[in-house]
Image (cartoon, rainbow, N blue to C red; front, side, top):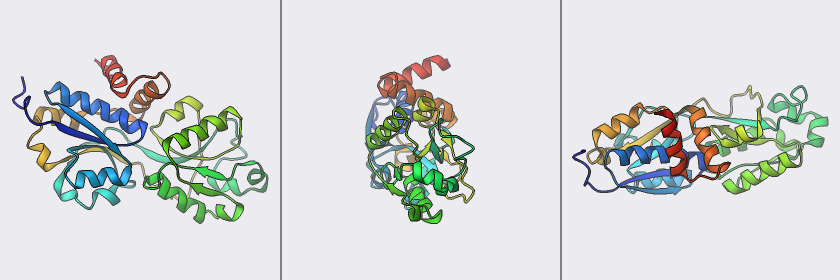
Length: 262
């Protein structure tokens, strides 16, 4: 029995996107296994980091470092411990699998007249604080896509998902700012475009971030287990698919995933 069992509730925060909920649900189950009560909160990217900076979040799941989220974490990095990454995310632009690879194989191909004529010009993204959104707005400018009529439009997660689902159902030619892990990769077989300018950042490490204050309250065995946990991109996409395709709650999906690993 953990000596920390009756300690104060641990607040786990995640960015308000489904795959972040997936990873946070596994973190919650590990903390609960070690006797902690857990409160869950979520917010958009920048706001979530601000909440931890202000002391309202004990464990943030997860910071994508160094490319996507260091801009937010660097403000208070001296007050937290960054654990070993749980998975290795990266950003891409992708097209549906029925768009011929020989016609659209890299981002610059979107400028080819026969492609620009057929391709939907709205590049639908998620909230503007996301790394993929910042990178994509820059992509449109630096590849000269705006001159051909393309425009990056940020939006909600539901806007983004609906846009992909609708486009695939209609066999529309469109490009989408995407990332691994994300269940739409599995569901629709979306194909990554080459991006030789390197504007989409690097492969990041998705690491839980725990405040020093919270480390004094969390069972060290729980921290050790979280530090050793590796879900991988495939694992997060599996949990994300259980949530969004199979209809499980995040905690139900985490339970099924963890049970299969025992």
